[in-house]
Length: 125
Image (cartoon, rainbow, N blue to C red):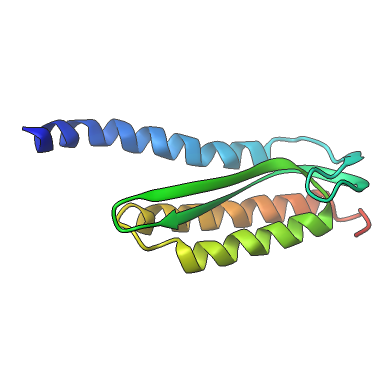
């Protein structure tokens, strides 16, 4: 009986999970301008852009998602992007759901990174 209940709830849970995942893509593509303010990672006053990076830690029957959403400078965007992508590759695909979610996060992080670098192309490091 519990398996049938779980099977009925799966499509709604999957839809809710995917909507939260692709919410970061919508945030990255939003036409927010580059602003001069303090970087929320290093604290220096620089040109910043709103970015969102996601990391998945897969376990056999669980998973943990870590996210970073904030206004970052160009050098912090580089550093955080590579940190999140490396940890996605190493710790990401070790669970049943994580095999599906990790590549989505991977592509989403690349999209956020490219958009941020395009917007900050004239900013100093």
